[in-house]
Structures are given as structure tokens and as C-alpha cells.
Amino acid sequence: MDKIKLTGLNFYGYHGCLPEERQMGQEFGVDVSMYLDLQEAGETDKLAATVNYADVYKLVKKVVEGEPRKLIEAVGEEIAQGILAEFSLVEKVRVTVHKPHAPLPGVFTDASISIVRTRR
Image (tube, rainbow, N blue to C red):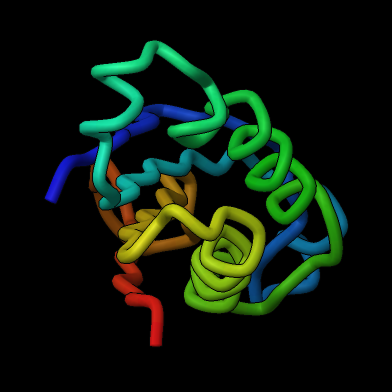
């Protein structure tokens, strides 16, 4: 299956279990991989035969900057379900949510989760 990938989408949100996270907020990163058949789009050069990246970006932005969640798992799930609901050409989606400033004791580069969902 073919793939459209959006990497390094960055937003500011208020997700987390700690009161400080929900009050002060922090940066979140999102990567999205959408699996679909892109042959028609490649042959016809028509936007209607693929997924508009700008529309996916808007959906991700709305979720990450929207209602605070305790878990980034819930953020990833909402994004994945939204993509499958809104973009009928997408057969499978992988969403990774990065929380690089998670309140962990110690030195680390990133805390992230990945959600993979397929159309039923």
C-alpha cells in the first residue's frame, strides 16, 4: 500500500496528568502516516484522488490545541479516528504523538506513543 507521511507537526497543548501541565501547557509533536492507494492520483494528477495534506494538518491542530487530555494515548486515538472518519481513501493510519518535555526524572530526548488503526 502507498503512504502519505506528515512528520514533525508541532503544536502547543495542555495535555497531561499533572495540574502544572494542564495549566502551563507544553509543546507536542505529531507524525502521521496514512496508507492508501495513490495510483489514480499519480496517473491523473488530481487532488480528488488523494488526501489533502492541509486538511489533515487542520484536523491534527484542532485535536492537539483543543480539549486537554490526561494521556497522549487519547490524543493519538482521537487523531487516528478523526482521519479515518474524515478521509475515506485512507485504509490505515499510524499516529505518533511526541511529548519531549514530559515531566520525567532524568535526562531523555522524547516520550512518545504510536497508535495504528485500520478501517473496519
